[in-house]
Length: 262
Length: 246
Ligand SMILES: Nc1ncnc2c1ncn2[C@@H]1O[C@H](COP(=O)(O)OP(=O)(O)O)[C@@H](O)[C@H]1O
Ligand SMILES: [Mg+2]
Image (cartoon, rainbow over all chains, first blue to last red; front, side, top):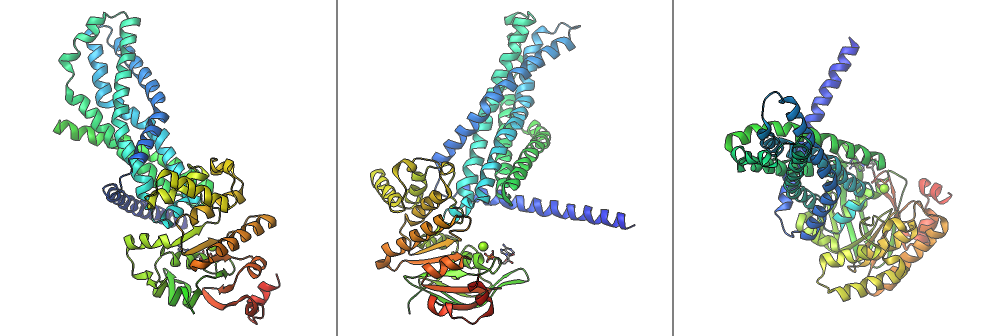
């Protein structure tokens, strides 16, 4: 009986915690949006952060893209080998990459590499009073630390998604043409028939939205950090886990939504 | 007497818990005052109130004759330029060199040109005893004492009227402790003619007696003694007597 009561109490507490947490997070989204449109605009910091994101994830995004494209081409070829669909492999890979694989995989990579780094950097600044030092100097720490990171993620993600798409297609082309021996002309000729600009737009819009979410979640967990180095580790972990979960969940709803408007 | 900071009937509560009770005192302009007390006495809260980082529950706080509890976000940010603050562990920006840390407030808040900034930063670093070689190092490459010097140089950059030091020597060895205090006194002396006020938070009784002009003793959120060092030494308050005998 006591056991059940405790269990219910714990459940209740964790529900209350999630709701207050969500309220906190929503408030943070509004605060950062407010400071994003308020001058001064810190172009240099924005540029530094975009450089940082590119530097941290370009290689691993390309690597993931190349192998994803190659594996995908191979799977389709093997799976449909009983039908003669050589000319469809190229368009199929390209469409899947453009609409789904490129934005989602890029999002997962960037959440893991950059969302984590955002939480770690800001969290460290928090526990070593660097955030207080900014505030004492009269500088808003959300404007100085969060805004450039969030905007940089929003701008970088579509770029990285585009790169993923390009490298992924290149990988599939290599497998299709060089390994499986499909004629190069056949591999590419149907692309124009199936591929629409809106599919690329879908991927880039997703990238943009994921970038926002990764940035806002990463910086939020940085500011939430308390209690020394251990707290920084916890915050970093939370940023990665939530960043990835949100990318996957939002992708589902966004796919639905974009299918209606594009 | 001229006060830099004045508390009038100030209460501070966190939720139901009263942290500071009915504080009434003035901190003398142009002097070094130490706020002394055990852990949890409310020293850091007092400091945050002075800087307008947390609101008071009741009463008025006057800083340089401005009632800061009436100021709103933007004017409060502007007003904070009257303060310099040296943090317990210096709180240097870890992504910037010593030079850039000191240049930071100048770049943010003045229209100085690059050569002027360079001259000013190197002067500030020299005044706090940092050699040129160390100026281009990151904080992670400096010792604790050096970081504190750079932190002091950064806090001095905008020539504040009031300097706040939060536990400037906790965690430092006895020799560095005296070096840091010498620096505090030296800074106060060099800026004496413009009525530069220093407020130190500490629980180091010996250094406090040696280096400050006034002592404000805080116990459980109440001021139990506020006097110059000579009077303080003769206090009959039992807690202070215990502190003095440490
Ligand atoms: N943000 C806060 N919320 C609730 N209680 C606080 C907060 N900050 C400080 N306190 C409480 O106020 C009291 C005084 O704290 P503080 O001013 O940090 O003391 P000191 O710096 O003298 O050690 C302590 O009991 C502390 O737990
Ligand atoms: Mg304290």
